[in-house]
Image (cartoon, rainbow, N blue to C red; front, side, top):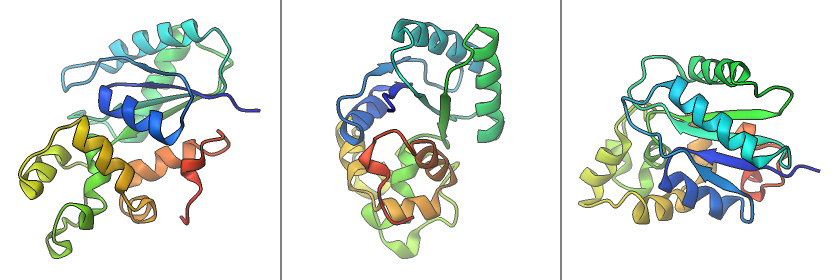
Length: 183
């Protein structure tokens, strides 16, 4: 029986995950930003995994791509490799990367924040928080971000955001009811 735990990079992600997978442990790295290296993230994630003490399966990691030039797949591979080097072996580690930031998942359901005719062709890679603020007039990452994330049409976002699709697919078989929607 799965007993997942989550490691995320910020407060918005922590609040969001606590709503979509209630009762599951969630730890924050507090290592987000364009200057944070994947190596630094790996060291912090590895120490948090050790604190979980093999009580959770799988461990799901969610970070933002930020301005990193590598692809999401490359970042996932690099983080996984670095975790192995940190001694994190024989565990089901599932890594998700929001492209560029978790707000891009909101922008992928553009109807939620603006006129659908103005929707950008590609929403992954944008500065999602800036797009939301421009469309709504103001934006508080934690308060508005979580509320908007919980309001998205998951089917639409799954179709429009490759990074959301990859993350949702990694939540399969985790006893997280959030993934039960028409894909």
